[in-house]
Length: 419
Image 1 (cartoon, one colour):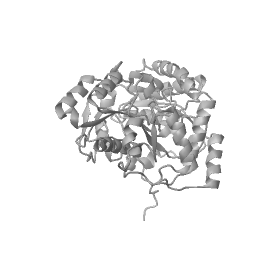
Image 2 (cartoon, rainbow, N blue to C red):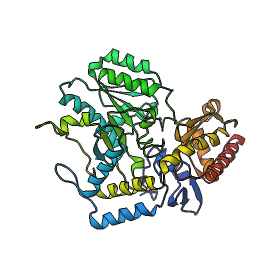
Image 3 (cartoon, rainbow, N blue to C red):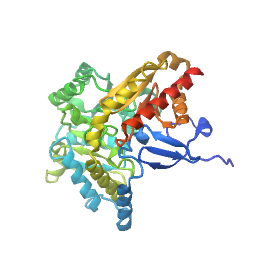
C-alpha cells in the first residue's frame, strides 16, 4: 500500500501536488505560516473569504460558546435554533431588497443550486411553470455543484458537465446578447439571469459601465428574476454588504457565502425578495420548497456569522474596503510595465488581477502557477487563475503591507522572467 497521503485536492493536478504541497499551520490577521515556519502574506484572503483576517478572537470565542450550548441541530420543517433565527434577521435587515427572506445553506455551491430551484419553483407556484430557463454569462463562476457547473462560463470548469437542462449562456458585458437570448428562447420560458457583480474566478472582470443596470432593466421588463451571485463580492469586498448595491440594483435573489463568516465556519444562503418568497410564505396551502442541505442553519456556523458581522461593523471594514480599493489598484498598476504583465484590472472593490502576457502564456500554459510559486518564495500567497493572478487581501490589510506585497510580486515576476 502506498504511503503517500491520500488527500485529493480540489482543482489540483494530483501528480504534481507531491512536489509542491504547502501545508498551512496557523494564521494571524493577514499572515499565514507553513509547517516549516515560513511566513506568508495572504494576498487572496484564502479563497476570497478571510475578509476580517485570521485568528480573530471574537469569532473563535463565539464558536466555542455556541459549541458549549448546542453543537448542531437541523432546521427542517418547524425546527429552529437561536443563532439561525438571529442571523436571518441580521441578513434580512441588510438585504438590498424589500422584505427579504433568508434560506441558509452550507456554502456557495449549495446556494447557487438553491437559487435556481427557488427561481423555477416561484414561477411554478405563480402559474408560469414553463419558465425554467436560466441565463448566465461567459467568464462567470458559480461553483461546481450541478447547477453551478451548468451556469459557469469558464470552459475548463465545465468538464464532466453540464447536465442541468435549460441553462443558456450569453456573452458578458453585452446587454443585446441578453435581449437576443430572450427573443430566441422566448421570454415566457426564462426564469432567471445569474451574474456576479464583479466576476471573481474568471479573472476579476468588472462589468462594463451600465451593463448590469441595463440587464436588470431588461429582466424587469420581461418578468425575469435577477440573481446576484455575491459569494465573492459580498461582506465588504465591494464596500457594502452584498456587492450588487454598488450598481443601484434591487435584485430578486442574492446568493451569499464566504465572507458571511470570513471562512471561520462553512455557511451560505439565498436572500429572496418578499415578492419571490410570497407564494411560499403568504398563501394558505401554498407550496413547500422541498430542498435543503443537512447543515442548513447550523448553529455554530450562524454564531460565527453573527460575530463576524458585528466585528465588520465595529471596525468599519466596509468603509475601509472603499478606502483601499484605489490603493490596491494603484499598487498593481505599478507592475503594469513588467514584461510578463499584459494588463491590470481592479478599482471596483478591494480586489484586482494581473493578466499575464499572452505570448509568454502560450509558450508556458501554466505561467500563472509558475509566478504564484515564485511569489511563495518571496512570502506571498496569490491566486493563480487560467491567464491571470488574483489579489483580494483581508480588509484589515494596511497600505504598507500592500507595498510589501507589490515589491514581492515584482521580485517574483523578475525571477520568472529571467528563467
